[in-house]
Each structure stands twice: as structure tokens, then as C-alpha cells.
Length: 335
Figure 1 (tube, helix red, strand yellow):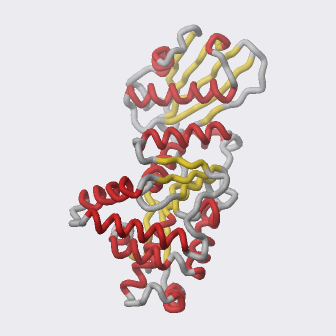
Figure 2 (tube, helix red, strand yellow):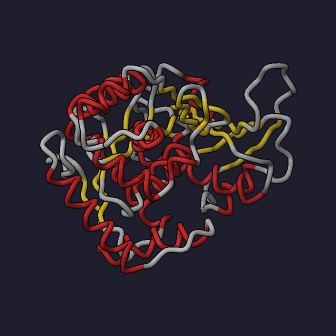
Figure 3 (cartoon, helix red, strand yellow):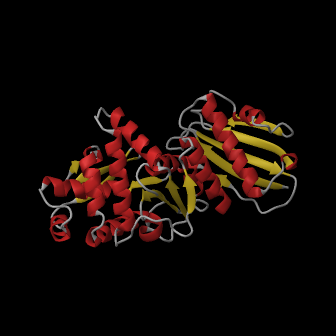
């Protein structure tokens, strides 16, 4: 007989959250241990005292684990204990080397099993890389590093100083006199320029175009890449950009390149800007994106291109959830 352990966490005590978490945990245990349902003798769950809206054992039954015995218990309240956590033990009849599975926030319970890893997601403007990177980081309970925000902050500094962003010498001189800081609060990245939080301001269209020009300067790219590697070297994180898999983190554990048709990308950006109350012309936006593509792909230093070992995903006709699930599946195949 073999005992396989696992644990996961949920965002809130809701039946659907519990069902989703239990299903995902058991699915991962089955996959990593190459189990068949009829090999499972029994499954024992325990949940922290803040989970009471639904029994994990019942969630397992509804997920199709009907041929084995199921049991749920509630743990006593412990000061400083992990919140909203579901633990599990599977008893199987065959003797194997078990692969225990700890997901999301429960990874802290077995740090020996949760190795640091980095995910690189590259692609042109409007391909969906930032949206997907944020969702993936949240799903994996790791850091999301918005590398584009760092270049945008540099561009904003140059605009405010009245500097020609195409003049590398002037930009480089300015960068020596500004302080760029990346902080995290409640899981969200904040980009600070000389102590000012510019996270929202840098999303302006003028800043976006200037950032593309500034990113062509070797001195700027080297400085940004060094800072990004420093952060990625300390913790698991998802980075999105245009040269993450080829230049910033060529040895990233997982690499993806997202793309979409120019029309789809322009429509996504158009909808985003209109939703923020901006007045934009769709045709002008298409031209801007085409220009940005040309600038990014033809720059001499670390141009936009797919890494040879990156997985290519065309998101044109895919929903956000479909793209996210595709990436998760590809990551799982590689583990």
C-alpha cells in the first residue's frame, strides 16, 4: 500500500471554490502518479476550521471518485496556521514512489517539493500576454513581474523632462538621475518613479509609443534586464514582454509566445482604451500597433521574436480561459 499526500488552498469559503480546488488537486495527484481510479482504496480529507460551506469528500464524489471510501474531517483552529486549506491523503493498493502534490498557497507546507520556477511569456502588443501572465501568476500563487511597466516608467521620465526619447545619450544621462522601484502590495505590482506611484499614468498611449523607442537603447535594456533577472533569481515569477525568453531569461523553465492577428490585437486595445473613457480612432490604433510591431521586431538589441524552445499560441480565436488552460496544460506536460 502507498499513501499519497497533497494540499491546496481556496480564495474563499464557497461551495464552487471547494469543488474546483478538490477536483484540481485530485486530478493532479492522479496525473503525477499515473493512477487509475480503481486503484484508489480511500481518500481522507481534512480542512481548516474556516471551511464549512461544503464537504471536500462530497466534492470528490461529485468529481467522479465513486468507487472508493471518502472521509472528511475538520482541523482545530491553530493560531498562525494556513487559512482556507484542504489537505488530503490517498491510500492506494499498489506500491509506488509517491509524488505528493501541493498547490497554490499550500506550497508553503512543503517547500522541499515546491521548487522555484520562472515562466516567460512574450508576444506583440495586444496578444494578451499581460492578461494571461497576471492570471497565470495568480493561479500558480507566484509573482507577476510587469517588465513593460519598467520601460514605460523610463519613457514617462523622459517625456516629463522634455528629452528626445530617440537620443540614447540623453536618455542614458536621465536614467542615472532617476530612481525606479518595483514594489508589491496585495499581490499587485506598483511601479514607482522617484517615489511616485506611476502605475496608471504609464498606460497612456503617448507613453506606450515612447517606451517602444526607449527600449531600443542598449543601455536602457541592459539596466532593465539586470533588474528583472535579479527579481526572477530570488523567487518564482511570471514575466511578460517581448524578449523575456530570448534575452532576459533565456533559461526560463517555461516559455510561451502569444500572437494574434493585427485586427484582433487592435480591437482589444481599442476596447481597453474606450472602457477607460478615452476617445480613439480604430484605424489610427491599427497603424500605431503596426508601427510598434515594426519597431519592436527590427531593433538591434533583443528584438521581438519567438524563442526556439517557446510554445507558440495564436490567441485570435481563443477566450482568455482557453489560453490560460492551454498554458497550464503545456506546463504540466513538461513537469
